[in-house]
Length: 305
Image (cartoon, rainbow, N blue to C red; front, side):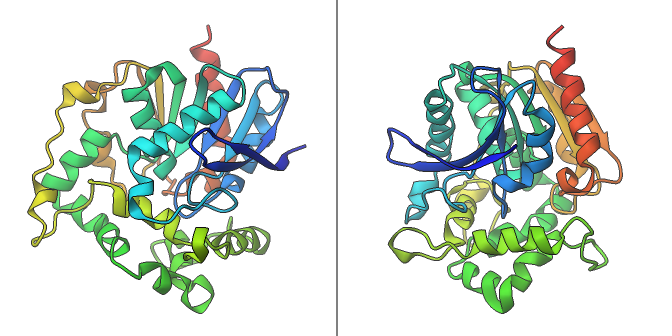
């Protein structure tokens, strides 16, 4: 049985809510969600892996029942990494196998690059390596167009627009390219999302501000004409090497993160396995939960040999 309503008060005064399944003491398998989700995005994975592992899915800083501090500077990448490291330590572990999607993947990539001692194995789902994302945002017009929404989200007041009409625009993030509502977005799951999107932040800040502040705090976004600094970001590939064994699962129909983001990934990830899902979109975790679970299981078993 999945146990939710658990909280970890970290030494940095951030409180993370989390759900888990399995016995503490077994190998830690940590699931990190993205925008605009929460721990419950991983229910199928918690059910699958909560026997062999201590499977844990937190709400990241700024989401659902976790702390939602006020201010863009509270969502800098360094602080998000720190949350994950402190959370692993809080659970009584020295490292974890991490499965991460979207913004959770961004945090996990950074942790594996900068503090690899916390990461035993890394499984990324539709989340670009930061160096390759920077390259594509600067040089690939198609990715610039696909990521244009990021600059809109960074604008003041975007959370107010997203929450209008019972979150109509926010729910559009989940739609198929033809505008159809996905089958996985059931009324039961919709109720969980709406509940999470309605929980205000600290000092009664907007419920969505925490998640959107990830975009505002990140230096990676499509270049703006009036913001030359965004065009001047220089990342060197030698500074962004991943030594941790890594599997990347990728829904190839992702309209926001294009397939070119996988090009040259082997130049920055030394031990790499790529598992494409040709019909999957950005929401492949929901669309193909059994296949995602199979790929996770295969990789964890493969590198344990």
